[in-house]
Structure formats: structure tokens, C-alpha cells
Image (cartoon, rainbow, N blue to C red):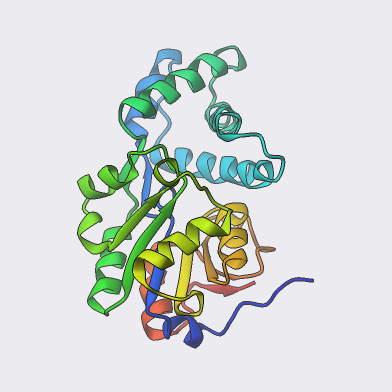
Length: 245
């Protein structure tokens, strides 16, 4: 049975907004990706990389259910992204390994997604309590601070730091405990259904999915095309580009 999302007015009445980080607030550093792909004569533009990311996330969404483990997900995700932009199959293993090393040196998700800072600032100005729940590798709080998001966030829950990861509902429960809030007071916003929709629902939190290419029409929750639409939804209770799938 497909679950129907709640009314937008109900979402707007909730004072707590939990947010995913990578793919929601911060995007992949395209310049660092292009530095790597330039070795094989490829310099894909931002639009092509963003489309490749969206398709790779759809694969990752299904792969989560197969429990590949974090490194298996990493290698599969980036192999598909890189192949999508033209990297030869013979170079994929080397490039995914190199990206892992680059990420460990400095997080690859460190570029504010267009419109995200403005959206978060509007939510904070409207009195929303904001926190991040992220499957990350220990550095996401620093990355969010360096990109300007840190000043709006009451807490950041990094899976590598706390030993829990989405979709385990306990990572959401930990964020709520830090905020001294209840599930029925919260909304969770993310971009991967298997992590963000399933995990939030398991914790009793209503999810909102960011789905730029309309790849997840079966998500069973409120979806929006861009984080720019989030303030209209969560402050005004109005469906703009949002869809009640």
C-alpha cells in the first residue's frame, strides 16, 4: 500500500526540521571531479554531473536494501556516475579509489547547493529549529561550518561519530533527544528514499524528499524539485513545485 503524505499545513506547523547534508545542503565538488576526469580528456559541465549524480543516487537507493556496506555503495555510486559522464570502464576502479582518498583528505560534499543557504536562512528566520542527520565519515560538521550552514544548526549528527547510520531510526531519535523534541514535532528533508524516507518514517517523523529529476514518484511522501521550494512548504504550508506522491 502506498502511504499518502500529510497535508502541507501539517508540515508547516512542525517546529523542528531535520536535514540530510550531502545532496540536500551540500553537493559534490565538481571542480575536484573534473580534475580527475581531465586525465581522460573529459570536463563535464555542472548540469551533466548533476544529472549523473541523480541517476547514481537512484541506483544507491535500491542498493541500500542489498546491504552492500558503505564502501560497496561508494564504489558502485561513483562507478555509475563516472561511467555516465564518459569515463572508460578500465579506469573506473582506479578513479573510485582515488575519489575515496580525496574524500578522506577533505570531504567531497563541500559545495553549497544552489539556493540552499537562502532556504535555510529563511527557515531559521521563521523560527524553525534546524539540525542535520547525515551518513558521513566524521567531517560533515566541519564541512557545514565552512560552507556557511553551521550558524543555523543546533546540532549535527554524523553517523561516523555516533556509530549509527540512516535508515536506523535511532540516529533520528538521537537528533530529537539533543533537541528535546518529539517525532510529531519534526520533519526530515533528504534526497535518498531508502535512507531519508524509510529512516524518518521508522522514527515516526514525516519525510520530505528532494527529487530534482522526478525519479522517485513512488516515494509515498511529499516531494519537491529543489530546496528552494522548502520555505514555501514548511513556512507557508503551500505546495509550490511540491508533489504529494
